[in-house]
Image (cartoon, rainbow, N blue to C red):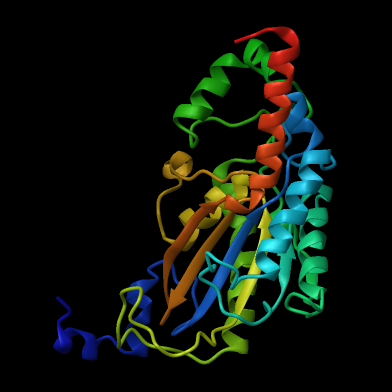
Length: 290
């Protein structure tokens, strides 16, 4: 049960306790939506990507359109936990696969039958994928054969090993943090500060959600670091998060304290998944496989 005395003590001046990393502006009331890019040709081919350019595959283009349509109709059932207004901006990694996914989202939001808003879209190098050095563009089988020990250590202890010539996790965090701070600062400037006084349990809010929100389109690896940074968790917890292609993550920030509202939503991708399932079934029928 909530303690009213303690709730009254948690005013805006105390919000730093909700953000020990000092990254979130005091009293920020906002929503941050993370979207991973759609499938790329390198993913189809089984190659490591990192910061190498690889265009969206045909399925990736379809995924980008579907996630755009989902975000452009946030109130469609089941409603997304985001405000009913247009987002403040769409920030994205400058790589083609993320830029094209962000563009599909912006196009969907501009549709008069959806939000009908021209949402600003901007690239930010801080959100680019983790640099994979000599592994970029190389098939995973070759990496396992040539760098098996390094790869095994990376998968088990990501602070002790990384791709030769690539970025370490502290390097990634150092260039990601200013980019994330800029997104949060823009949200703070667009909204009204809140406090931790009042209900903190979902379902108790009766007033319309008027908080600003923004979208960041990025990559699996950099999003892992982003959440660890935002929630002030150690970087050795890198593998605790998973982000599906064109999946949606919703982070709500209440009175300066971030919380996870939705993780890795992919229901909007059902048309692509259903088509893939039908194709696999047809192939089994032709081959006679069980």
